[in-house]
Amino acid sequence: VRVLDQRLLLLALADMLAEPTESNARVQALASELGVTLKDGAVLVAMKVDAGSIDRLRTLGIAIEAEERARGLVVARVAITHLIKLAATEGVRRVEVVQP
Image (tube, rainbow, N blue to C red; front, side, top):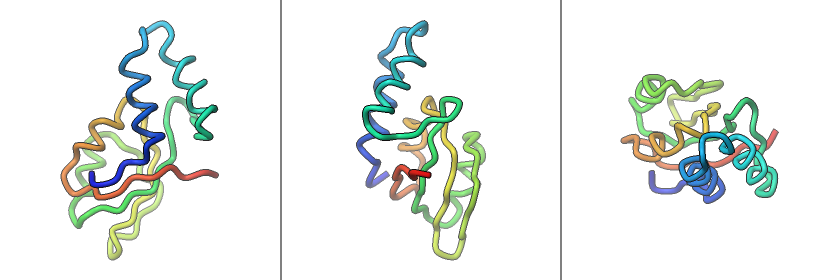
């Protein structure tokens, strides 16, 4: 990823560093502080991707809600636990939070 929204990075790190018993509460509190809406431990994001990356995203278990293949645009719901994998996915160029 060339650009990953800093708020997403902070949420991913908080999830990784939190004790299992406190992870959900800690991540939810941080998300609220950052102005990010979480639903069932996932965040709605908009992505700019290369051709062919959409299939890789599905393989990771990312729930794609909308796509425009011709322009390489994707809107998806991503679990906080998948953000690091998303950031390392070849062909993903930009990931930003979508606020409903």
